Amino acid sequence: MNTILAAAGIFAGTNVDDLIVLTVLFLGARAARRPVWTIWLGQYTGIAVLVGVSLLAALGLTLIPDRFVPLLGLVPLALGVRGLIRAFRGSSSPEEVTAQGVLPVAGITIANGADNIAVYTPVFRTLPAGGVVVTLIVFAVLVAVWCAASSWLGSHRRVIAVVERYGHWLVPAVFIAIGAVILTS
Figure 1 (cartoon, rainbow, N blue to C red):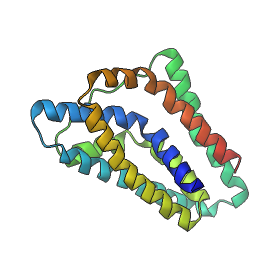
Figure 2: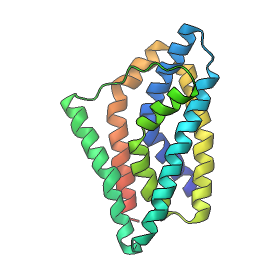
Figure 3: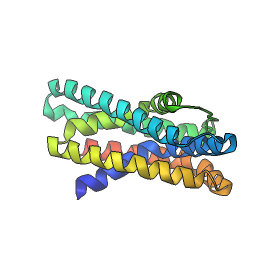
């Protein structure tokens, strides 16, 4: 159960920004009367690429002695601190995104996914094989939840305003928490 909760927290923390981007994509698709299934498939494709890269990087990190693995927590911690600094300076702004088709949506997800790779890699490195499998299942389920939530949000403009207003504070806080957990493992 701990692995499921941790995986859900990690996914949510690294994909809050995707919630905003996906919501904008769903809004645009509805406005242009384009099919929304391409957004779903593009998001799954993009997350699959990010997870695959993270898994490969984690395998490469098996060369690092176990006693140094917790230091990988410095990566998400640094991302979180950087995000908080940007939020305090007011330099983080939501992206305007319009995309048509599976590959452009996947490309947006991948381009927006450096934080995913930075967080997933040390997490995958510290988990046993069974924990990685559980995490992948949780991620797959949560991609569907994210798409469904974004589709719903994409029909409520007031909700978008709230997410845009507070999302830039939430993401860094979650990254700092993830980094702290890895550092103390």
